[in-house]
Image 1 (tube, rainbow, N blue to C red):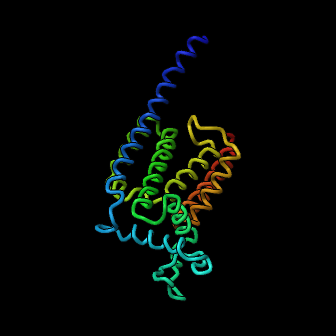
Image 2: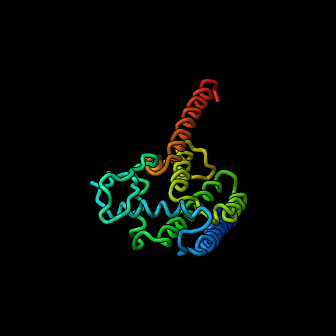
Image 3: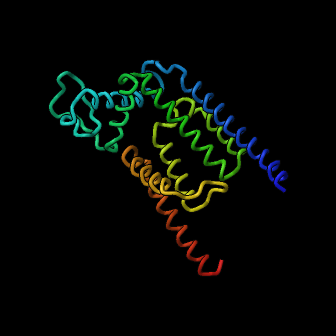
Length: 235
């Protein structure tokens, strides 16, 4: 019996290694695609979006907190004008965290912004494939990862930074906590804290985080009443 159990686990282990090899290869492919013209100046189709992020992140690094008030600021000049345009249309930590990330790579430049977009896109890919592996199986997860990598929008823009990765992590933690992942880990305190931190940071970084928090709350309410009904009917 022990020998039979051992032989049955070997294909599972091989399949698991094959999955993570596929994840690694797709991550490399996505990195190659997104690194194309990584230092190109901000011009051309939709480059204004990247340029505006770099511009507002620059003000965080260049001017003191007493000037920016912790908000994204449209400011130029040395010294800048006394009352700049402060953007109230973006969450407070959005530009601050972009500035800190870019400062790690030497400051606000084309390649430092795009490098972080590349990094977060790969993190999102890994989290997506890991999540789908437990929901629809390894082969389907690998196919989904390949489609994700080859999408023209992903290849051109990346995944838009941190928000997708945070949302995927929040979904992972939530599904672990309710036991909805086949073969997933046991619920632990790290998943509760991970869910809370991911939702909080998501709201602070991007308005999409508000939608993610609302969806998780609604899902938890639906799951609560489903469990209550099942228990009440003897299931």
